Length: 296
Ligand SMILES: Nc1ncnc2c1ncn2[C@@H]1O[C@H](COP(=O)(O)OP(=O)(O)O)[C@@H](O)[C@H]1O
Ligand SMILES: [Mg+2]
Image 1 (cartoon, rainbow, N blue to C red):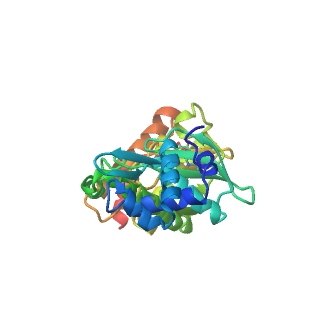
Image 2 (tube, rainbow, N blue to C red):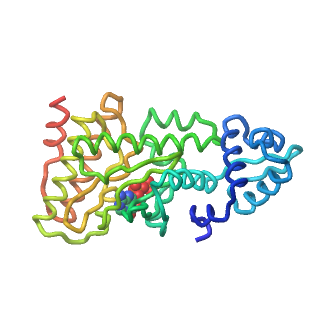
Image 3 (cartoon, protein in one colour):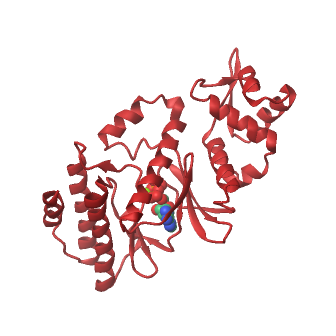
């Protein structure tokens, strides 16, 4: 596990963390922060800074630019290590375990809290593909300079965590949000499987899972005022006790946004047609859509 945030973090000493943070803080202003600027920011003797920069570069937590001016930028792994460091110091995470489910644009790990509670830590990367359909965010994401990808990754972490707090409060069937730092979101681990991997389900369980999903769509729309926007059998977990949990929320849109209705219709259409094809559950998507859209 060479890219594992905790394994990488364990190799670092105090100097390395200070220098890594300095490179992060300079990233809005410099594509590659020059060494002298890092020296001023980190406030350590230059030889120690150079030693740390070499080490961080070897571990691929920063990237070195060999131009006329040598400079450094933060990598995705460097950002993950800083997020892990903060979550560890705040006693949110004690141990980061195996990486699970290779995500579209990020990495998802199992973790343990200091109390031994099993959690999921999702490190956001960028979000370009999940924002492809979402016009407002697409223009935001596309307008941010490519070299400022960490701004987007952090925005995704904050967005996902904060909306999960509201959804949870309103009674949506989602994993309990626990904490967030930078691009990392910590949430309750749901023991179970992704819906797309389930080939058969008895009628009662299928109805219960679909009921949980539809209720969550309804709560999101009526009580929170949002549409998930990327709902499918890939973003639903079915727990061991046969309940459905909707995951992966960072691309949500507010219902007042121009494409919200189109996304709501699509979310409902995708999920009901999956249940029809796979388990023979018949729910009229148009009637459900009209019930929601008409009620607002
Ligand atoms: N709370 C959770 N409990 C258990 N597994 C999860 C949880 N959240 C995510 N996963 C696993 O990680 C995968 C990716 O998570 P997801 O939030 O959909 O991110 P993305 O699709 O953007 O990579 C899921 O398909 C699932 O296998
Ligand atoms: Mg997903």
